[in-house]
Image 1 (cartoon, protein in one colour):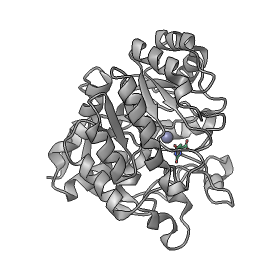
Image 2: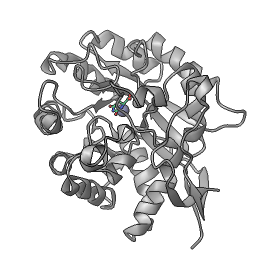
Image 3: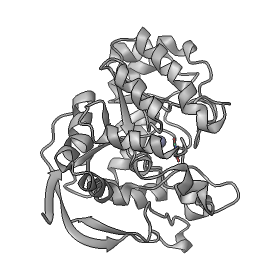
Image 4: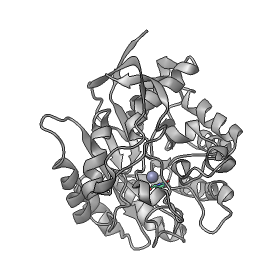
Length: 341
Ligand code: DOR
Ligand code: ZN
């Protein structure tokens, strides 16, 4: 087989950023995706219905004529979020709210520390049919244990709000996979491309690799294996959310480097290679589009992309240094077997 036609992806977790960076990175997502769930941690964050409308408009303004790509908009669930704002957000087309615990990742300052104080907000989201997306890391805990310690919060919310759809974002541990598997059908989990490839050794095992540094950090080989097994399992609770998170090369290669791996350019080629290696190609389309469509209740799209078996070397970076918006993609300099045709 040297050609694969497959439904466009639903990438249920992507950082498209804003302004010049948005213009730089958007083409990679729209080239491969039908829908993408757009994260709200821009500056200032998407907190209100007005913010959401303005951010969506800035994305739509950059779509080429005839593009069928649909951004699915989110807002930040913050300590200040009110149930009244939830209905306004829903009325303006919000699909999900993203909860960032305080300080655990990029632009999460002013995040949540008291998860129970937000019960009225979860209640309003449940009523409105909005999805609650969780960055599952507990602030203030040793970094490798943050996800594990957060699982009690996930269990608590899931048990109290049985009709609220909840997504544990970018799982990194075998323990998280087991937890999501055991919880009822209203709880799902996104898996990123980079966490299916990386372990902590790729970040700090040899010389420091800032381009593999992300939150939550990649964990042990057996954790990575559990994520791969979940992706290949055909279990509809586990679907693609790339967490493609571009930062400029200057902001990655410095003394205080930002967390995030920019996977959008290699999204489908990297996943195809992985599923092919494990002889599970027949499950790729469900993982990259069908399972998310079912969980989120998205319209079933017909649009496809073609991947061709033609090796290519992933560019070292996109954008030029002078513009200040150069970004290094995941797998930069590596040769991949498949490319988007
Ligand atoms: O590594 C990450 N980068 N993890 C996140 O949760 C946020 C993201 C970003 O926005 O840069
Ligand atoms: Zn993210």
